[in-house]
Image (cartoon, rainbow, N blue to C red; front, side, top):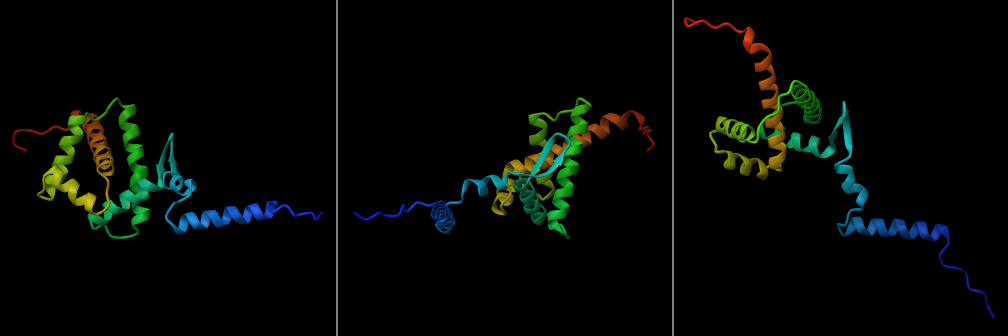
Length: 161
């Protein structure tokens, strides 16, 4: 009677797992960790996070706008500012309505002489999700409303002006 070796040693198991992960990557099945990496926090701003996905989306939007410079750096800076602007607006009791968001998206698209729907189609063709454009607009509108609420009472414009 001969003894057979157990084929499943710890080292063999590790090699098998590594081979399986490599095979999954090769045939296009990303391990769960890679998918989570796209939505992992890149920057934390107070109690909110900016994810890798948001940075990539903003970079794509900046490309559409033909923004010069280091797009990743600009995207991160803008997203941090967006979080701060929206948080400050909310702390002041300002929240943009759904209709306000739609109107803001329409207004922005009109600057490119497009309807909201056509603008969204154009940016989606460049890899920008509608929700990313929407977030961009929410930040801008929140800040505009906050500035208006804080400073409008100080502005004195006469009929002559």
